[in-house]
Structure formats: structure tokens, C-alpha cells
Image (cartoon, rainbow, N blue to C red; front, side, top):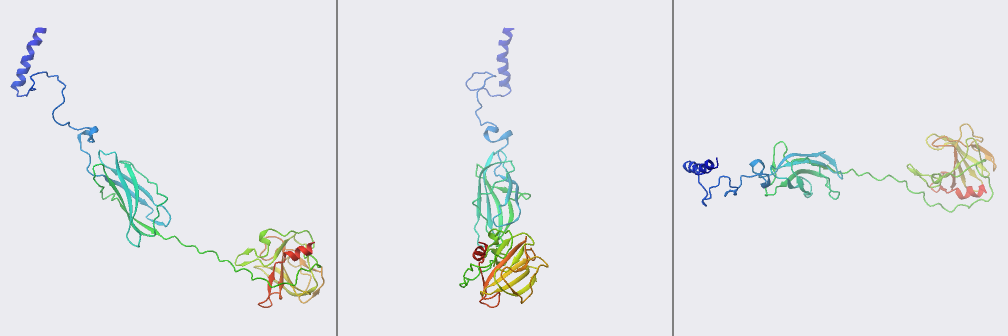
Length: 329
């Protein structure tokens, strides 16, 4: 058998020679030789040519969306894109916002290198701001071999965007401050506290000059229980007795003997104890504590006026807290 195998080798060589197959020039006629081929390899994934196919020359935008297409200044748009390039893992990409009106400049958002074949939602850089106007938004990409983005009809790589100016909210109208009060006759040491029962002076909103819608608070609130008697601090004459649904409720005005006028508001309904023009003594009951008109709870709204109660342009209120505290002692 060994002799037969040796005799086959020359025959095989002869058959190959007869068939026109070239043999290695070295004359070492070994059919099973593992020497590398002289020509270039046929291709493979390690050369960027999977399955023997060459890589695509240019990247392609298969998805590009922006939403919403109309937004308000200061709001970041949402982007979605997918770039594909056969045989290439990543490409350099950016998104450009080119203004088509106004005096804005093109804003370019650099995305760096992005993976191909993946749907991406790039985050909006905080430092980037779009000015009001209309824009054409375009995605740009470049492959490793220099090929630039190829756009398709169903994903053009372009989208319109309108940025509206933010509405400017005017500042709230603040009522002018109460003009400086002229010197008043001073704090009376004698007199009667106007609420004949337990009471407090409330919080900051109860003070003279506290802000109100369209005006400022012109008196001092004295918080007390519903029905507590309200009395005249000094002797005088009742010069007003009326009702105001949107504000003071049932109210009285006393022109005191010392030239000042005292205003009492939010009296309980049907509790007036004096009539218009009546002369009263210090400590005489005028009404009872209530919460009529624009009042959130039972209390006496008390004002002190110099120059009469709304009798002329020189009439004006003063802070009554010091006088109330003097009477309270």
C-alpha cells in the first residue's frame, strides 16, 4: 500500500500540469501548502466591508423630527434622529438652526460622534437660547471617510421651527403711598379704648399702610368677638352713619371735641346705638363688633383723620396704633 501512494504523486502532478494549472515556481509541489495568496484579500468585517460589500460612501438621515414646531422663547425643542451608514459604527453630527427672518444668527448644536442605526434624543444644552423668529433646522453628519449626509425624501434632515416671543407680564399696579400726614394734635392721654372687651391688634396685614387691592389700609384693625360693644373714645358728634356693602359694611364717623375724626367700620347689623347728628359722651356705646362688608372675621376697623373725615383735599388719615395703645393702658 505504501508503494502505491508514492506512485500516485507524480500522476497527480501530471494531471494538474495537463489541465493547465500553474505550479509554484519554487518547484515544491505540495498541494496542501498554507502559504498566503499573492493578491489582496477578498474583504471581511475587519476591513469595514462586511459580507464582502464595501461601506456606504455617505451617511443617511433615516429619522429626523423636531417638536413642537412652534414654541415659546426659553423653551427647549425636542429632537429625535437616526443616522445610518452601512459598514460604519459612528459619525460626527451636529444640528443647525438657521434663521429665515429677523436678525438672528445661526445656532449650531454639536452632537459629537453618534452611533449609527440608533434612534437618538439629544439633550438640549442649557446655555443655548433660540431668539424669537422662524428657523430651518437641519441635521449635518460626516462619515469617517469624509462623506457628508445624504438626505432622503421621507426623512429630509430638515424641519421648520417657529419661536414666539415670551409675553411680558406687566408688574402689578401698586397704589401710591398715603401722603405724609400733617402734624396731628398729639396723643390724648385721657379717653376710652373703643372696644369694650378682650381684643388683639392682629398681624401685619391689620396695620396702617398694609397693602390692599388698589389701595392701602388706612386704619388699624382691633380683633374682638362678635357683639362686643364699640364705644366713643372721646366726646363728640356723629357726622356719618351708613352702610357700604363692598368695603366698610355698617360704619359710623365721630367728630371728636379735640378736632380729630374717628371712623368705625364693620359694625354688626342692626346694632347702631346712635343717630346722625347726635352728641355723645366718652364711653357711650355706638354699635357692636361685627364683620359686615368686606371683612374676613369680626373686628373693628378704626381710623383717625386730621382735618375732618374726607371733608376736603387737606383731610388725611394718620396711623392710629399709638393712640389706641395709649387708651389701652
